[in-house]
Structure formats: structure tokens, C-alpha cells
Length: 513
Image (cartoon, rainbow, N blue to C red; front, side, top):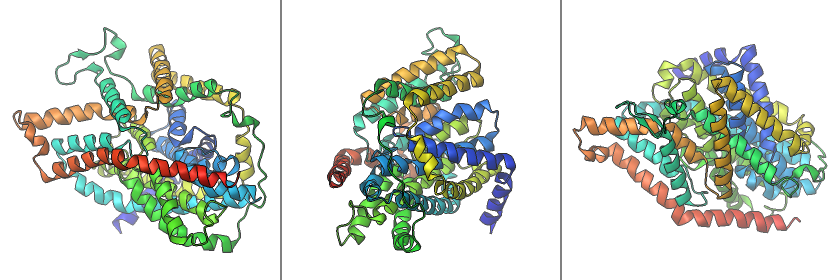
């Protein structure tokens, strides 16, 4: 009953005209961001962070806007997958396998509507999982001391690369780079400047919002400029016919068991650190294919092959919010960006969030329910509009992204130095993406580096310089064990998983070309 009362208070916070308008705007913009190949939820949220701060929104409205963008981008990723056979982002890759064949059969509208329903089911029940699981995880988190938090942060760095990481060494390099960036500024204990090179603007350290917008948004502008006029410029591709938009009840009913099973799988994948929506989508599709594909119809336009990955990746998106809100440790790349937003708003995620800022957390959860309903109502009748977004040429889109980035960051800080830093991070992000170095561990290092250092020093000082305190409790031993396994496992089995994902995409996709 207490949970329902708190959720009711959250709806009282979320159900204002301003918050409803922000949720609607976030869902709309997020769907557009997700539909554009290459952007995805992480970039979508990063691009719109300056907008949220420029509008002068408070903590709850800002989070409602950006989490609506997050959920909207997860919905929108299926549009280009189904119509163009180009995933909007990595989690939408598995949707191509049956979504594009359905579109070629003249059933693009049905595939888009079915994926919207599956996305709603996955995200809706994952939000209920967040309501039920996060407060229980908070009770466990209250047992954490400095040594446990240090081990928890180490676990986040070790596992955020995930099973789908292309190279664990590159992930480790990115995390080390992020930790190095976090050391810039005045040492909080000694007051000695570190790595500032005499530049007074760096005494307060690197503003992680500047780093995020540069690494994600500006680097995306540079990538699009580099590939202008090539096959990545999708504005010249022929438009696919939509056909019937509303799927029949019998079609939806045949997919209900699939959506139920894959929602559970996706949510579990989202809660586990480092797994994320990509693995949730892959596991959901693979398991469902083994369970129900007796006639070998998966890969040829089976509706269940559309429902499975869509329910799975949207459930994983909701699941990834659980460790971010309850422990302050992001479960995915996009939640790492949302963590930066919370910290920028002077809100510390973790065990005390539910007691110190209940209006923020429960208002956010209520807005997720509202946003899911908005997305379902919006995505089916407005399919035609969202598909036209795919025809927007990059020469129009990218200047808008750059303008939002520059105006937003200058509006936040009022410093031309921060604009130069943002451009520097944009160039760095462009180079690192060309080298296949993941960007999320850099952001995570910049965000958590100071807290990691503070907890390390505090634990060692309490133990009078005895470093064994870092592995002295059962909880720290468990966390270090999970961290080691989480780092080594992708090295052992990650290559196999990635190969199977690519083979499934290449082999089954070639059967419909």
C-alpha cells in the first residue's frame, strides 16, 4: 500500500500541464531521434540536454523531458529498421530480421504498429518492475560503506562494456581516460590543482555536460559530415509503402505470449550492469526463435520476430533505470547520460534519493507510465509523419544539432572557454568512434571518478592505511567477483555472441534481398 501511495504522489507531481507538455514533446522528439539511423537514445538525450537547461526547467521537469526522449528513442529505433533495413541504433538491429521482410511484403504499417504495441508492453511492465524492485534494492544499498561503494564503482567500469563490446581493452582504455579527466581540477582534500596547466577555468574540473554534448552530439555532426553523399546519407533512399496501419486482433493475440516472455528476459538484461538493451534484444529474439519457430518462419517476416526484440529492448531500457536510481550506477549508456543530468541538478542518485527527493523519483516513474501511453497513442496514427523524418537530409538536420549544442552549453555556463572544450571533446569523440573506442566509459569515468577516489581514500583512512579493507567484507568480495567475471566474460564469450548477431543479420537479411 505504501508503494501505491508513493506512486499516487508521483502522479500528482507528473499530472501538471507543464509536465504533460514536456512528456509529449520528449516522446515526439525522442521518436524522431530514434528513427534517424546512427543517433539512438544516448545521442538523443545528449543532444537535448542543453535544451532542458536553456529552458530553465527544474529537476523533475528536466528528467521527465529527457526520460521521455529516452523511451521515445527506444520506440523510434524500429522505424528505419523496418522501412530501410537500417537499425536506428544497435538494440533495433534484431528488428530488421523480420520487420524489413514484412515491409517488403506490403505489411510495413502492420509491422510498425505491432512493434509499437510490443514496445509499450515491454516498457510498461518494466516500469512496474522499477516500482517494485528499486525500493528493495535501496534497502540493500544502505548496507554499503566506502569500501563497498568503491567496489561497486569498479564493477560499473568493469561491466559497462557489456557482452556486445567490440574490444574490452578499448573499453578499459576509455574508462582510464575518463578517470584521468575526472582528476582535472583542485584536489578536494589537499587543495592542490591537478592537470590544470595554469588555466583557471579548469580549477573546477571538466563540466561533464560539456563533455557529454561534445562527445555524443558534436561527434555525430562530424560523422555525418564525413559520410555526406555516401550510403549513410539515407535521404536519397526510396520511400517504402506503409500499407495497412492497424494490425488485426488475431495478429496481436498470437504475439501476446511472445511479448510476455521477452519482457521478462529484457528486464533482467537491463537490470544486470553492462548487459543493456542490445543484449536484451538479442537474447529475446534468439530465445523466442528456439521456442516457437517450428516452421522456420523467423527471418522471413514472422510478426513474432518483430514483437520479440521490441518488447525485449524496451523492457531492458526500463530495467537499466533500476540500478541508476537505487545505486547511482548506470545500467546502460543512456542511463549514464541521465546520471550526469541528475548530478548537474545537484541530485545524488542512490539509497537516499527515495527519501530525500521522493517527488523527483516518483514523479519521474509516474511520467514513464504517462509517456508510454503517449507513445502508444502517438506512434500508430503518426507513423506516416515519423517515416518522413527519414527523408530529412543531413545538411538540414546537422546544423540544427550543432546550433542546439552551442546555444545550450553557452546558455548553461556563459563561458566561451566551455564552447572550446566542447569542440575539443567533439573532435576527440569523432576520432575515438573511428577507432571503435566506446564513449560511455569515458563519461562514466568523468562522472564517477571523483566519488570513486573519495570513497577509496575514506575507506583506507578509516582502516589506518590497511588496503585489505577493500576486500574485507562479504559484500565487497561479491562485488569484486562480479566485476572480474563481468570483465572477463565478454572476452571469452562476447566474440561468439557478436558473431551470431552479425551472422543472423547477414544470413537472414540476405534471404529477403
